[in-house]
Image 1 (cartoon, rainbow, N blue to C red):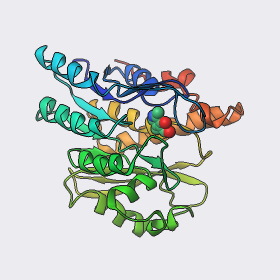
Image 2 (image 1 turned 90 degrees about the horizontal axis):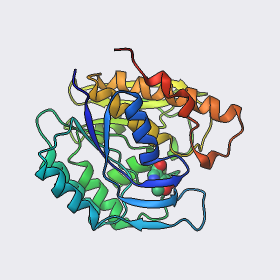
Image 3 (image 1 turned 90 degrees about the vertical axis):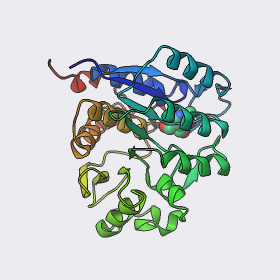
Length: 286
Ligand code: PXL
């Protein structure tokens, strides 16, 4: 099988393990070529650090896209995450329209917020734009906060009022079905807990029409960047030809072992998931 290729549209945060500093090593370990299209360069991520720098890459992105187009590049997946400005919504939408083929998986991680609140740099207009962008996706990977934003619902209207877990299974199933836009896109809703001490994802697979829960042991919250680790492993597994449920299982299990390692060392949660020594677990023998 030729090496699959993914265009990864995320920020590059120098410290704090998220976005491209997670996506590039994870996809590489999985035997997937990652082509980064940075949305911003930050000194750290915006969750739990003060005084971070932020270089907006909006102007550069269409230039990169035009060059890649002139080279005739093709991607097995287009995977987007944290965006740096409202204008980037249209730039990423155009990128998807330009590069999407029959065999391209479009994975939109609708990064907007957590714990019921938007991230510091996200405006209401960006959140509204993210909902439009996510309509182009084959697969979305929201957390519960992002699910509320996508559906225009209050966080407190979600299963468990957003904050209490475990969540009601029927309510989670209805939620992913609502997020699927009538079965048009697949959904992996993260942070879904079906029983005490467990967490994982509730999935809707648009290919089969099936709704399925994937659960693993709950280790700790809030561990920064778990959403990025999840969506990166999921994207890697999808381009390797796995089903949505198999890809979600691999992502959830990898996060669990990384979270165990992070907590065992008592590392600051804002420094993210201590995943590097565990990358070998994502490698498959040829
Ligand atoms: O993990 C999501 C994320 C990605 N990139 C940046 C962030 C965050 C969440 O805070 O700040 C820069």
